[in-house]
Length: 334
Ligand code: ATP
Ligand code: MG
Image (tube, rainbow, N blue to C red):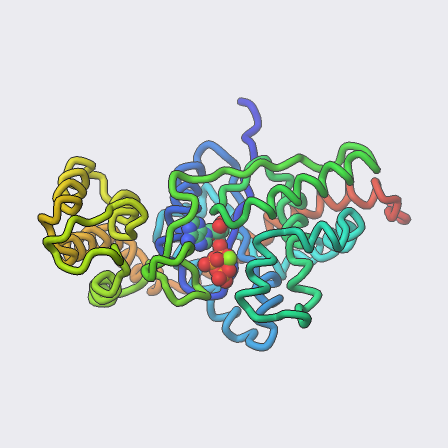
């Protein structure tokens, strides 16, 4: 049997998982875990770069992420879940990789630029936050990942990881695999406010652990077609979050087409579509909620999955670090 290619993906433990995570990355992780050797990194060190004043929040969300993974179908027999801070070799690798990239290159990263603006840092960006793409490159390269399933906002990170790998390899000889991104069918799910990205930080998310009442309430508040005043006005379905969500979460394409046709003709009101969408989302979320309840009854098991996964993951990065130290000639004592 040929050796499986490797996946590295992950999340920041900054809040509960939401529908954007599901369609952008989690769904791919679940379907790829048979075919690939998959590592999932809980990026707590990265989460601290913009939450260093609230470490308790990061700590609490680690369990939340674990429960989320397991309840959407990440199978710990097939996927290895690792906690970033417990693999100190990743921090060591970050330091070496810092020499492979310039301040100007980091400044050009559009995702980081955007996040700096959103967070209102202006001139006061913490160095840790500014340089997180390097630490993320260390995560990806440290695991020698071939493939990284991510949402669209992460493309500049993968591109920079590749550039860093190339530079290192050309200076010191072949050491790192050059990673490729994998985008899903919905690489960027908009928020319920119609804003371009559903995000934990923007308060516009439907979370995987929202109750069915909360889902209904959020869907009823959803932004739709701003040009439509009455249900009898012809509506726009393109760029309309209602239809974006229907297409992302409903398998019955005929029903969606029928709704779209009626919506465009002004023959169905927002409320009817919203009620049906809430029902569809709740049908999708119900088994996830149930599975989460099961795992909540066995937290020691969840913790032991994380501990075992972290030990295995650390072993992989330690192997990479032996190559790296040799390459940069810091392997003084063998
Ligand atoms: P934060 O606001 O703390 O950055 P986040 O909601 O952006 O949180 P991350 O942990 O940064 O979540 O992202 C985890 C993964 O989910 C990444 O691969 C990211 O691209 C993907 N992702 C996040 N939000 C979306 C979205 N709205 N649509 C598609 N993919 C998404
Ligand atoms: Mg993010």
